Image (tube, rainbow, N blue to C red; front, side, top):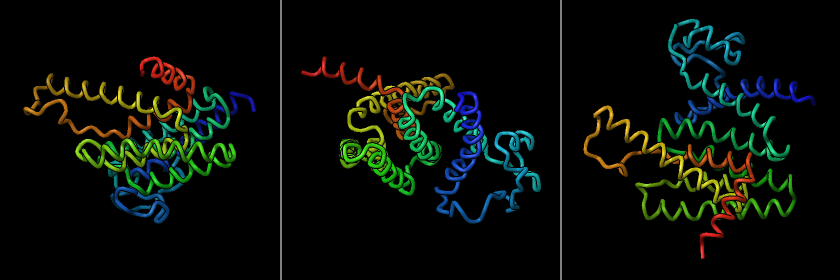
Length: 264
């Protein structure tokens, strides 16, 4: 398939799929069905027509308001459509292989709603992390046979154990949801890429925390709490590390090489 055609289909399909992922991010924390009822206004309950569900355009033309009651439509819906379209397009252009691209697309479909939920609610629901873990093991087994299955199981185990121990002994720092999420990530990346996942997650998490801390100082909103008391969800940074590992496997080899040189 020509790259231009594949890119166009990925952008369009990503926008449609992103709309559904935005619904997941809104409904799952509220423990409501993701299937029934269908797309509707959260304020007046009016069922949305096809013209209200066109990716990107509907939200923009309606100015983020319901056509019937003019209630506010969450901007997360538009953000989800844009991010998914851009990611699917980037996968077509930059994925090192079709298999890596498919695995990245599956993982992204869980990572985006989990990231949005973790930012808003500071939790990673098992309704998403556990199916993602199962899908990763199944996809790896189907695509790469017994070796892929063993690799996925080992990656899941090695991803779960370290964060689970942190969650047990220091529950204020991490939750068990983070451990299960890293286990799911390990099922896609395999054990060899977990070092890159944790490196990207830790470095970007520290950088984001510093920015927020400095912004708080600038706005004179500091209340005497220390830098380490800031509540920063770790799930979004794990997601960033996972997608980096899948789309840029060369970085995993580089990080592992550096660690082997540093460690005795």
